[in-house]
Length: 348
Image 1 (cartoon, rainbow, N blue to C red):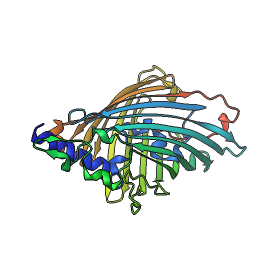
Image 2 (cartoon, rainbow, N blue to C red; image 1 turned 135 degrees about the horizontal axis):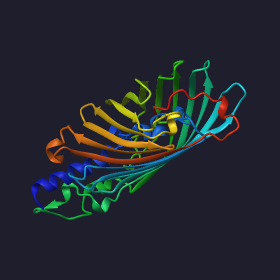
Image 3 (spheres, rainbow, N blue to C red; image 1 turned 45 degrees about the vertical axis):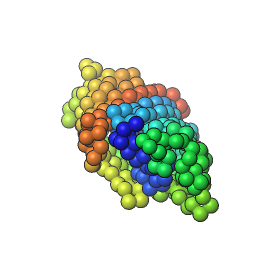
Image 4 (spheres, rainbow, N blue to C red; image 1 turned 120 degrees about the horizontal axis):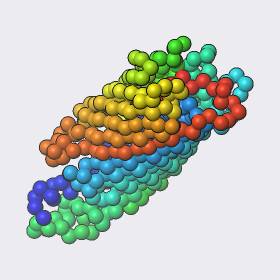
């Protein structure tokens, strides 16, 4: 084993085992964030035109540097109950599993969410959402290398003093998230907006694999702000700019960009279920330039995304970042209070 491989494995092991608490990258994020709305903000639960929304997403990254980091996610949400004033309660389920690096660091999370949407006049909607669930984080210690296991250019596994610190193979914990959102559309329905604020890990759960009795390592709260717009320049062409700001502990990031959407149908009519193609360009500060593309038809949206890495890992990754593929389906209206609901914008 050469010196470069030893250094790489030591760095990965240290990052994954001893620093799981302060790293913003440990929280799930997707390039196609609008395909995982319940990850962004629980207030987005039920914010769509239809009776049920279901979707899945797959992400693969860092395959050029180490064992690929692979993430699977799926969600379903729907309106549950509506009142005569147009307000409605929505519920949803979000699950994802993340597998990272040489040590098979895995994070399975299942979250239930509820959101209440209250109409503010005829063309706006305010929502409050609450989300809670269970998470399990695990790691395969037998696949990690520690510095004090090195002897004459080789490794003798299981001899590290790190084991004496009480590093465990898994940890279970609960998560509580909350959020609010405001959405609106103008009278011509050619301009809409969504503004959201979210707080994740409100209970700051202890997710440390380090089992020392004095360990107080836990997930810091993560705060997010979202702004999304829908701007129809004509009957066929729509701009969908968006911005997300996230901060956790001493880390922060901004994702900004725009999606260009073109309706192929001769008569777009009810746009959420018309045929369209889209292309998006995005930038994640200090990390990646991203592109998304795909199509929409009959309530189905299929998209792919790719990240070009521009961080300090660029030289090692040759610019290769992450690849994503996602699919979502929105079923048409069918519930008895559908005609009373106001869903002014479905950007997220």
